[in-house]
Length: 228
Image 1 (cartoon, rainbow, N blue to C red):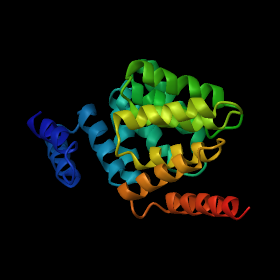
Image 2 (cartoon, rainbow, N blue to C red):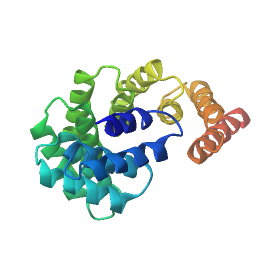
Image 3 (cartoon, helix red, strand yellow):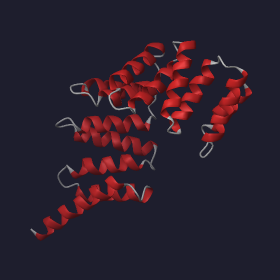
């Protein structure tokens, strides 16, 4: 239990992921049938990009305890990274929500998965909204909801509002600045605001290729309008 708890603390600290994984491995040597340790180790390995290892531990956790919502959610995240496994990822997120309907992360992740499937955007939006209803400060869900709304004709103002909500919670969220910039660039008279958002994204993440491209595109549009 002490090694598991120490792993749980370390996994939340920047730069300590490897140390957390080491603690989880010690915990498993002492208690090989701990479904919580298998689940937490699986999720940590997934953060480290070791998808195959992560899947093995998450599946072991679910063999021991099929109702482990966190393990289902983590397995969904792992499967989502593998081409062709999207339907299986969705099934895992749905299993997570059957085990724990209040798991905001599973609602958000299911929304992300459904948004990739033709005709499922309304369902994705419903899950993003459910995640926000459970955790109003869930900035990632606000941003994802903005992404979904931006694909629906006439909903750009609502998308902008969601990106702005995400940035009020987490001002250093470079992707939300970039996405807000793109939404603003599609609205009449908002090119200066879009430029400001792209620059904010690049100040936070100087190697953000999409933000560089989007900023260059908007600056070209401004230049053409000035020439006209």
